[in-house]
Length: 297
Length: 318
Image 1 (spheres, each protein chain N blue to C red):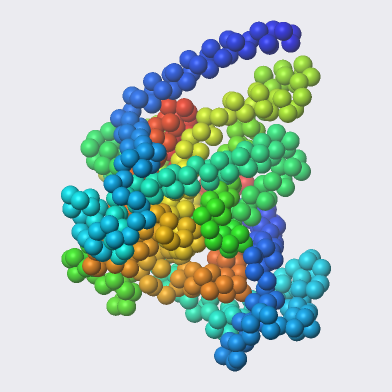
Image 2 (image 1 turned 180 degrees about the vertical axis):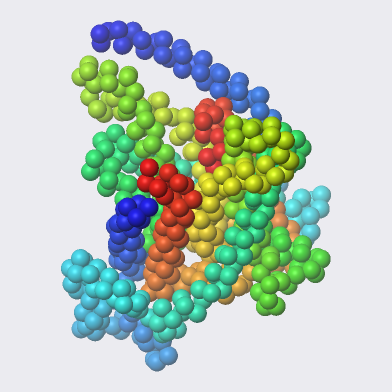
């Protein structure tokens, strides 16, 4: 019987490949998802090739007069130190995308671990994990991230951890629910009957099957993490000057909004465009991967 | 319903205990020495004490006075006892009691959160219903575009842009909260737009689902006017899941106020907490975090109860 299962593996892989091809086909048929991918590509490529895209060093002061309005020379104008805002926005993309991805990797891994433990082991493990998650959820919105930043001390790295911790509860809940559902399936019972160990069942049979909601959530959470990260920096609990971080730049922009609207406008526009891109892609992925998840957010 | 209520109240106890424990631990996990902080901060107003001037004896005395020499669980018990009596300590900065400061700042935050929620509910439900009854038209697409944008706009940037456009360029509304309701419009809009986007999405999905059900088809085939069917038959059921989300959003609005108050320079719990964090006024930070999260838990309880009350399956215990 074990051989039969092993023989099934290549066929499963082929099915897996055709499934991902099907998902991509469904994704590119949605104009909004394409728009999301294009927006993300623009932001992502600009961030990766920042040294070539940005005309000036992001931290170089006095490349122009202070508060020079947008012009051909300074597309987004300059700030109070005569730094080129366009160059700073381009470099800022590196930091914000990094915040989003690192935070989701942290939150996703911890959430995956806790959610699988609760969903698969059940009983006392489920009770303990879920009460722990309930306590985390009692800190609304950005408050959990703020609490973690206070404990760790304000810095860019700690802010990423804090934002990551803030995403743990949703990941854990979604993974737990999916594992609970998958645990009851016949293929899990079959693997049990064959004497396959719990860790193997979880890692090789259950987790690959719950990836759809996980990927959707992870994508959408990158957007939330970027918003939380920039908000923390705006409040002075994340990146420190002179880092070209979007939230920090916005905080400067707030002070000069009356006389130099461009200082705060462009970093915010960059955040919005990036987050819209991720949300559109996330929505598209949700529809393509698992239509049942529609309307869950 | 009574069984449900009892069960729901019982699950509240570990959560509230957990929250108080987490907030209690904050003081111990912070990257500063609270004893040293207390000695140096206490001297404010008198001759300033530098950390190197603090003798070991004085340090130990303060440590004992603060109860930090006792085992952790005993300290937690003492903390819990004080919290139960409404004693949240004194602010390092102002020397006023934390409770007093929270009580004087809370009304402004509640006012902002309620205004934001009111705006979000009105905007979200109207747009959601419009999108649902005009499904797959440009109006639907427009509402969905609004929803994605609303979810993607950083509230603090939206706030800054509203100040720039509506206050400075157009001169329609004041920037600061002085001046009654006019000062509340922009912060409430900046705070509530995200919630409006979420409510609009959910309302649309919910109404679309209900409109496809048999009883709606029956009502329409009886020749009842479309508007009546939507408002009298569909909306009543479609809004049940919306109630839950509205309640959950209230908590998010409370914490979102932390940022919006700073953007608009409004007084309130949020701007007070941010100042407290930046000045390392830990008793005040602890107290604010505790009050905000416990109120969030209580709001969630009320939401659950109202949901149970609205849903006959839970209400009648079937």
